[in-house]
Length: 275
Length: 275
Image (cartoon, rainbow over all chains, first blue to last red; front, side, top):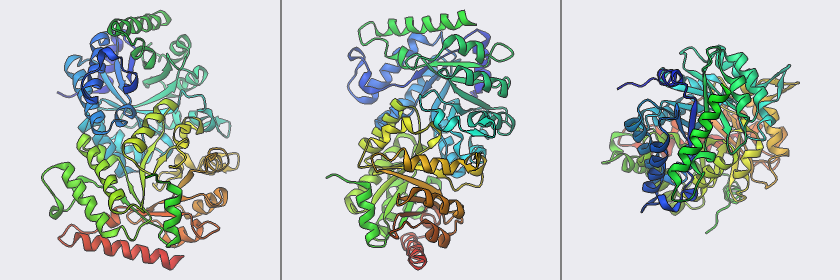
């Protein structure tokens, strides 16, 4: 059964689903009521509870491998099982591996194998610092979404990303390269932090109807209304709005699943209102 | 037993050891004569053979996690076992996880846990695109080496890294930030490709006696003589000269261990000659 990232997204956008939940499943924050014997089992149980509670509300899930790698092979197994569970129980939902990878060409080929052949993710985030040439190992996977970091959500992002090349900040140069040079297979996407709404407006103006993954809603306090206003494409689509910690760690109690669903519904409704 | 990256390096440099071998253990290229039942066992056997054959010649080993992640939990276990084996059989040799990681702060904390608490690497390579602020999660590990990508070895590196900010290319801005702003704990290092010797000379002029990891010798055909001439610090130290494929895949035959050692000796002698 072949999956295509862009087709999955379009079908979800058709139903006005823009929410993405980040499965940043920090083991230490997993509620007692969810815990099992074993690290792998606990992480998988946590993720399954979130997926069961929210899959009808989201266009995508976005696990960040850092929180799985922190637990080595057990974490890695939990990540693979989580992706398998999404594909089995909610096959309409896209899966974005937020790995922010970038290396030289033959190494990126190994990362692409990991993300797509082993884990079976539908998309991956990549870092532009090494240029577009070694990223070809990712872009060559035509059914997969390759999401290039343009302007990240962290407070110190401007130290590098806002450096001016002539009169253009670096993040706009990256957005232009992504849009005009790296998108030969039509599978390039952009990532922008909701904590930088003006920069999002500029990136959208550059990338046309390219999908944009938005980080920084929720715990990082990004601006949702401006994100929607500035981020939608010409078809009123094109956005994947991610929240992680504000949803998945919203409760440590027995009511975990209900609170997670309520928080996801709340954010989903806020997105609808802003549309 | 506490290990300190800089102290390990200084002790090896004292003995004029500058060679680093990249354990980019691409499963498909592992010789038949080494193969075991099982992916994990095969990768570990391959790495152990290389380590046994070369540990007296090197200052460091540099596994790249991409080649392990490509095989999921089995690869991850092989990576951990490999690092454990180096620490047991050659405790004087430093271990650099060439992960090129970078994410927002709380995520980098999870990556640091993975690299240092789970895998027990002595150093990690990091990507500067998100700025120094989120890298604090790495820099806070004072005994560990945090190696910032300045100018990478790949053919297309200049697309981003040579963009001019005023009259300064980006890689020089990154080198200056690494040296002057991000090195509060004295554990920051730089990475430069041997395929760009003039850029190495410029980076060395900026970073003073900071250790520089050199990629791109061997398969990527970097210039060894210029690397040594331009890369050494004021004490005639400060370099970690890595080769990966040209050593570890030098033979597919029964003579694998001998050829690997011969290739490592040859490169080690060439480094001595250039010193």
